[in-house]
Structure formats: structure tokens, C-alpha cells
Image 1 (cartoon, rainbow, N blue to C red):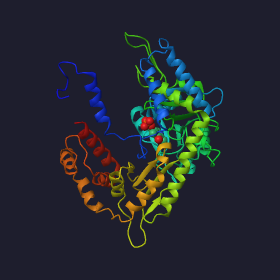
Image 2: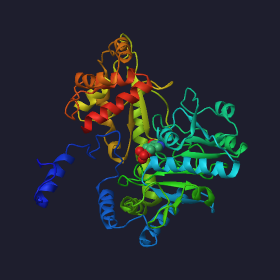
Image 3: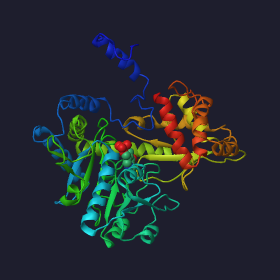
Amino acid sequence: MSPAFPERGLADPDILEWLAAERSRDLAPDGRAFAFVYDAGEPVRALARDAFAACMGANGLDPTVYPSVRAIERRLVRACLDIARAKSEAVGTATAGGTESVMLAVKSARDHARAARGVARPKMLLPETAHASFHKAAHYLGVEVVPVAVGPDFRALPEDAKQKMDENVVLVVGSAPSYAHGVVDPIPELAQIARDYGALCHVDACVGGLVLPFLRHVRPVPEFDLSVEGVTSLSMDLHKYGFAPKGASVLLMARPELRDAHYFACAQWSGYAIVNSTTLGSKSVAAHGAALAVLLKLGRQGFSAAAEKTWAAAELLMDRIERAPGLSLLARPDMPLVAFTTAAAPGRPAGDVFELADRLAAEGWYVQPTYRFGSSPAHIHLTLNPQNAAQVEVFAADLERLSSDLSPAEGPEEMAALFDGLTESSIPSLMAGLGITEGRLPERSAPIHRLLDAAPPPVRERLLSAFVGALFS
Ligand SMILES: *Cc1c(COP(=O)(O)O)cnc(C)c1O
């Protein structure tokens, strides 16, 4: 496929062959990826593929022209309301993903507070461990973020939230659980603080919404859902533990007027009447159709079996990590998300956690290197799912072996000097120095991660944008 746009059309097999070759280099659902992949096996994938194809032609822009869009969304939302133990007046909207659910929850809170309480300078209370999509929402929507501190267990501190609360706060956020550490914030306490001021309270159950409810009969699950007094909205991603293709999440609202506050209607132009329930105009509902298909196929029993199996694997893995000299867990999670790092062992200092990630990658394991922030150190994040759960024994053995002789990370001091001298014009040579050239990443990524980890967050943000720009150039 050399010319950017071919003069004569290519043959179907040639096009598909090119796509297949490119796709073959991606993370595969083979049970060796411990991030990004949420996989319940081939029979589930097969149904999702068929359902996705069946819904490809529908346009969610106008649910009066495509009644299937209404039918699919209503059934999907009702199932999720049931799972989240919502009261009878609750409603919901199908969205394109967790970020969109979060952005709409923030828009709803902002517009609701403006209309109901005349709040002109909106703020939101956001635990340090909350997902970055809330910062994105704040940035897009002009809402100020007031950070809420977390304790040593990485759960938000209600005392700190209470102290920072005032009349301009439109939304108090809690995670169920936070992505990095897998712990559930004290939702009933946060919701009460919001209620005291007439503010809304959003529970981010993007990653936990389809796992926590199905673990209640195997372990104590903290209160987090729409049955909690004062919780006004909840987000739940179907394209994570709902095992759906990307493009499916729901935003559930305790009352219809809160949902209406995230709608957007426009009659200020010469074309068709606009009323959008989400941020997109013309939109695919294929992933929603696939998500509904998977929910119906698995049912409560199927989701419980998946959650239990995955949790059992997480417990095994955590035990092995706790017993391994040179490794330590960051937290005891409420669901199968595991954060661990390197630690000093008898006779040797803590090894380089990013080097460990590279060693695992060389053995065919994909793990998620994560940078330090606040009280959370640089670490490796593992997302377990029913497929990689079957591999944890082998993975744990590799982890023990590969972490037994790690050297410590070298000099972050030199890096500080590098950041001080950083200018827009020095970034390209920095990229080249790290081996990022012609849109390709180097084999080893530890040097890149060490640099980003050492960078203060604002510098890290500039470097991340530069990296991605370089990759797409
Ligand atoms: C994944 C995630 C999000 C954002 O979801 P996307 O689907 O990636 O946009 C928000 N919150 C939490 C806790 C998540 O895990």
C-alpha cells in the first residue's frame, strides 16, 4: 500500500491482508496481557462480533428513525440499573466509553447546580486517585478541581473532603474502585457530604461496576452503588468487565432531571433539529448491541463465575507477590486489580521496576508500568480477567525469577538537570536519544519510563504529548 491514496482501488483480499498483518502485532487476547484486555473467551467474543456486525448500520443520531437504537439502549440501561440496585425513578444513557460517561456526569452537575442553585464558578471535589478523565472533563467544561487527599490505603479521606466543601462545589466524586489500586472510596460518607450542601455525588464504577456486585457472596464488598443515599450518578464501562468491544459504557442517573441536564439541544442553525444525549452527533451503536448481547448471554450466573474465578487468581497472585523478597503490594484491593512494586530485600536495594516490566515483556507478558504520583510510587499495574487468570501460576513463577536479581534504577539526579533545560526545540533530539524515531518505539521501554517517572507532572504532560505526536508522524 505505497501511495497514500491509490489511483485504482485495491482488491479486498489485499486490503484485509494488510489489516490482518498490522493487527497481528497488537496485544492478543491470549491470556498473557495484564492490562487493556478484558476477555471472557472465544464464545463470548464470537457473539459480540456477530452482534456488532448486526448493529453496524444503525445511526444513534436519531432514535426516531432507528427504533432499534431505543430498544437496545433501553434494555442495556435497564440491565445496568438492575445490577447497580437503582431505585425505580432512576434512568440512564448509553455512552461511547468511561471518559464520555464521566464528562457527561460533570456536565450534568455543572448545569444542574447553575439552574438549581445559581452556581456560577463550579468546583468538584476529586480524590487524588480518581481517573484522569475527571481532569479532562474539568478542563473541557470549566470546572475547578479541588483535590481530596487519600490515606495510606489509597482511599479518599472524608475528613479532608468535608473541610474543602463549600457552596460552589457541584460534584463530589468517589471511585468504586480506583483503577490504579483497586480500592473503593468511602462512598456513603462522600455522598453524605454532598447531600449536606445540595451537591451531586458521582460514583465512578467504570472498572468495578460489573465485578463488585458479583463478588458479594465471596468477600465483603463496600457499599458503592445507587442504593446508597445521596449517590446521584454512577458510571459503568461495558467495554471493560462487560467484555464488550470498545465503545460501550453507561451513565446511570438517580433522577430523570439529572439526565436531562447532560442532554444538548440546539435550534440555532438552518439544518435539522439537534438533540444529542451524548457528546457525539452521528454515532455507532454497534458496541452497545454487542454489549447487550454479552450481558444477556452471561446473565448473573455467568458474571458471577467470571468475577469469582478472576478474584481467586488475584488472591493467589497477591500471596505470591507478598512472599517474594524484593516485591511488595501497594494495597489490598477490593477487586482483581493488583498494584505492586519492587522493594529492598535482605542484602540488596530495591530493583528498577521499569526494568522488571521490560523483562516480563521479553518473556511475552504485558504489564502496565505506572508512574509515581502523590503518595503512590512508581509501580506495575495488573488487570486480571478470566483469560489471564488461568495463567497466574506461570506468571507468578516468571515474576519471582525475573525480580530476583534486579539492579536499582540509575541516577534520577541527572534527569532533573535535563528537565530544567527542556525547551520545545530540544524535545525532538530527546525523543531520538530515547530511540523514538520514524513513528516507532524502541525494543526496551525502561529508559522512557524512567524519564517520565522522574519528570514533575506538568513536564510529564508535555513529554507525553510530544511522544504521541512523534508516534503519529
Ligand atoms: C477506564 C476508566 C475510566 C475511563 O474509561 P475509558 O473507557 O478508558 O474512557 C474512568 N474511570 C475508571 C475508574 C476507569 O477504570
